[in-house]
Length: 264
Image (cartoon, rainbow, N blue to C red; front, side):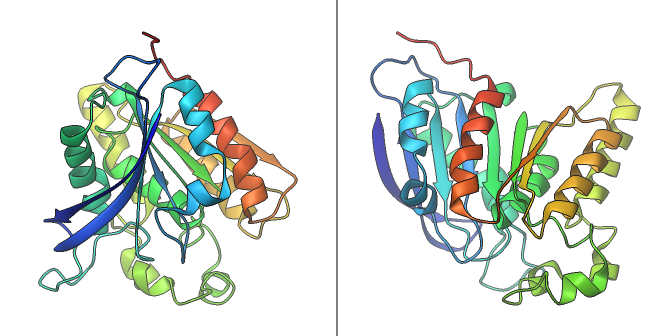
């Protein structure tokens, strides 16, 4: 198993970017099933490595894991299109997948390409799993910060806006029918499904701690995904919004993925 720090110049973000990668190198055959694993608010690409045993568990399963940095963007495209900030949604859902597949022997198959994240990264996994449903076959949301369109506006603007992250979403009323709202993306996919008779929704795993302030939002988004026609596994258990919960439940995610790795 190799642990790599990589950098490249992102055309989407218009700057040099870095990511961490865990790659099978010994027991398993390439191309490798791949998990794009997203961190939470105020953290970076090293968060999962510093706070969980993801490297050991990935090594056991022959799973490649790519962990990008997000810069508190909520993995969303920037509304100002002529600025210098770039589009984080397109970076995660398109460019990073393309570049890492060129760099490493990763599977190009949708059913072996996954996205997951915690808190802000949970929102990013939900939104981008839906937005780029032709790329990601499975998406996992841990304690997802999916409350923006799931909870009462007053709660969102106060308790759900800890360091000003609501500014990344924009005016909630104006954004209701845009791809910033996962429910809007579900509606778009349902229309596509009806048109061609194929279910394009990824499979979803959603989990949240019972003592987490975001529990109601996670219950709500899981139910919305089920109503949209997605295959959803939902779990909750004792826990708050912290790494103790995520360290435990990322193991549930890896088991749920049913990774089809082949040993040499």
